[in-house]
Image: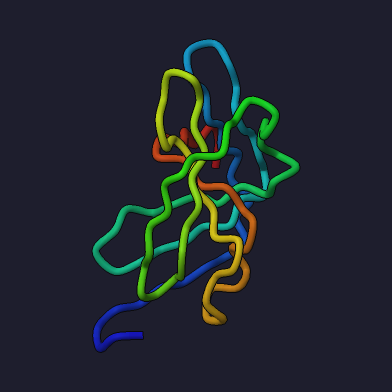
Amino acid sequence: MAEGHKITIEQGTVHVRVARGDEVLGESSRPLILRETGCPVRYYLPPEDVRTDLLEPSRTHTYCPFKGTASYWSLPNAQDLVWAYPEPKNEVARIKDHFCFYDTEVVEA
């Protein structure tokens, strides 16, 4: 990691939900909680807790020098709504294939 840059990942027990309108896209009581210097807390949901059947793969890919290359998925009316790291860097290997959404609601702590 770069000097002063830190990423921590912990197994969460909070109940989180991601919804778009009336459609629940993901819900989990076992998200990975990723904290990264200068970024908001992110919840990475296990694939079995995400409605992947509703998501279409996107052509978008972004590169993070700390996590690796992210792949994105979209809904018909929401481009690049969710991302995952299919091959993350070793330091963050725990997030492999977990899905992260921009708008994740914590339902209960």
